[in-house]
Structures are given as C-alpha cells and as structure tokens.
Image 1 (tube, rainbow, N blue to C red):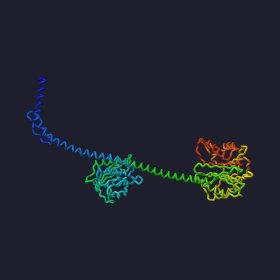
Image 2 (cartoon, helix red, strand yellow):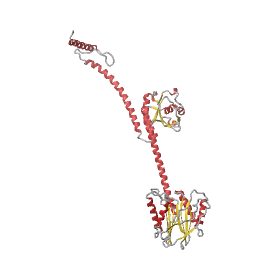
Image 3 (tube, rainbow, N blue to C red):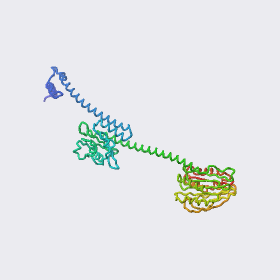
Image 4 (tube, rainbow, N blue to C red):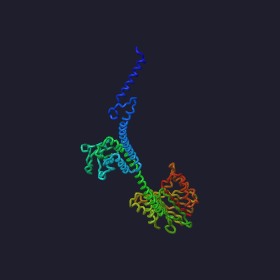
Length: 498
C-alpha cells in the first residue's frame, strides 16, 4: 500500500498546478469582458490591477452617487416630518396648525392642491377645514356626506385610497370638481386618526409632472397625517380652554357687576331704616339692628315718633332672601310709614297695608309685629301678623312671653283681620322683638339657639341699655353657632321705658 505521506504530497502538487493554470488563463474584468493575460514572468499581478482598478472605481462611484441621492431624499423627507412635528409647538390654533402642516407636506410631495376635511359627527358630514390651491375658497364652502366620494369612503373605512385614474374609478365623486371647475387627474387620500377614531382625511390632488401616486407616496402622506391628529386634539383642548377662559372672564365681570349692584342695593335698603337713635333726654331707650345673611335681605325694622307723646315701632321678616325680599321689604316699610296716622291703631294699620300688598297677589309675604308706645303712661298697643312671640322683660329680671292674638302674615290673604293687644311698661321694663334668625340660628351639630336660651339670656339684661342688650345678644348667638355660617337674616329691636 502507498504511504499516506506520499498521497498527501501528490495532492498538494496538484492544487499548486491548478493555481498556476488559473493565473495563465486570466479573469473577467468589472465590465464583464475577459482580461488579457498580462502576468509578468516572475508571476506578479501588477499590470492586471492597473487595468482593472479604473473600471472598478468607475462602477463604484456610479453606485455611490445613486445611493447618496436616495439618502439625501430620505434625509429631506425625515427633516420635513421633523419640521411638521415642530409646527405643533408654533401655535395652538387648530386651523393654523393644520395649514402649516399641509404647506410643509407639499414640499416633499409636490402636488397642485391639498386639503384637510374634518368630520362633523352630529351631521355625519365632512367639511373643508383647510384647502390650498387656486380653488381653495370655493372648495371650503362644500360639505360631503360620510361615504360619498373618495374622501367620504376613507373617513368611513379608515383606509387610505390611491386613485390615479378618477374618470374610470366608480368610487370617485365629481361633485367638487363640477362645483369648482378643477380638473382632477389623480388623488391620494389618507385618514386622520386620533385615539382609534377617524377625525377627518388628508387629501392631495394632481401630483406634479403628470406622475402617478405610489405606495411610497401613500406611506409618506400617512406619516404626515399622524401629527395632524395631535394638532386636532391640541386645537380642541385649546378651544375648550379658550372658551372656558372667556366664560370665566364674562362670569367674573357679571359677578363684579352684581356685587357692585348688590352693594348699592344694600345701601338703598339701609336708607329705609332709622339712622339715629333717640337722645338720652327721651323717656325711653330704643335701639334696633339688622344683620343680613347676604348683601341684602328681607328682615326690616323702623321706629319714629308719631307726635310728641307716641312712638311707633315695627319689626318684620319677609319670606325670602336676597333682592326679591329686599324689594318687598322696601314696599312694606313705605306703606307702613305712609299710611300710619295718629288716629290709627296698629291693628288697623296692618289691615290697610295688607290689603295694599295682597291685591297684586305677590309671591312673597312678611311676618310682622308693630306697636305704639305712649311715652308718658308706658301704655303699649301691639299687633302682629304671624311673627315670633315678643318678650316683656321686667326690671326685676322676670321674662314674660307676650301672647298676642294671632293673624296672618302681610300679603298672605286679602281682607285679613288684625287685632290689638295692650300692655304697660313700668320704669325699667323692656320690650324685645326679634326675627327667627335669632331662635333658629344653628351650631355645627345643627342644634338651634331656641326660645329657651333667649329667655335665659334676657333674664340677665336688667340695668343694660338697649344697645348693650342687642350687642350682647348677637355675641351670645354667634358664640353658640361656634363658626357655623349665618343661614338667615337677623333683626332685633329693644324698647325700654326709663
């Protein structure tokens, strides 16, 4: 058997011979022609490379130029898409954002016209938000039903559509073209999708140079439509914010005007009340106070001398609050003062005022207590209409509820009767009138101040002036409420015989 080493040596010699034969044959150059054998005697490849390299370089440069052109085109498109995204920060107004995006898109996809149609969900129609080109203004007046034409189909399905021969495409609607006279050679339409819902479509018409739209154009336009969805959402939020700001400004202006008017109304209301208290030389001490829960209220009081020996006083509570109650209060006080005469008793006065108020069938009514005090004898005649029970506080500290004969509030019913009750005040005796804003004042536990607490307080008032009694009573009520808001108007009147 032949040795293994000899067999290996023959095999290596054979491969070496094959390589030398290949060198003699030559190879094909870069252009495909067969290179001539130019090998030198010593076996170098120098002359072969000198002939082949120029051809190889020429082919490589041509390929590099083509690749470079493609790269530059892609860079331009990427830069334009970046610019489009940046447009979102240049303005928050929807139409301006979309208009800027459309103009930038036309730089990378040259067309004769472009438009953005938004979906009106209530009417199920598309309307032109932005339309560029020579017929843009005419186009913007047209509305398309959902499903009509290419734009309507894209809005309905959410799929992009390329049409390069509209005349032969049954889906194409010529209504816009007939209205404007614009000739459509081809068109590309893509949906504008936001949050999974189609908000509208972006459409470009007539690619320049007579070229057809391609899938590459479709992908580019779909990329442009993405930031449009963001622009629509930003525009919607901005419009809502702008609307809220305008509404807030209008509301604030109205509120300021109302506050000013309420302050004026409050001043007018207070002008109906006595501004000065009687002098210390008078044989009586009278004081009253009104504290409304709002700027104006429905509680009221009044007192004045009818003649040299008689003092008229009254206190009441209108059934409502705010401006309506203040107006009713003003009318009631005007009638009370205008109709009071020296020969009338309190009951007769209330009957006359009630007939005047009730004849117009008002929606409001007023509870009331009024009286006439004889400054010489202390005799006091009282009449009431559905009001809180007055208290007589003797100089000894004894507190007596005055059980007056009950009648209906003023304006509750026409031709109502009102009755007189006579009591006599001795020196140091006090008569206290109040509205239910005192007894119905609540604390945080919704407990009411009540008549029992009021009587306990009044037992401590002998020797105090009328002004001191009212100040101390309000302090006691507010301390009981312990910070709970005042829910009703408060009025108090104190009359003491000296």
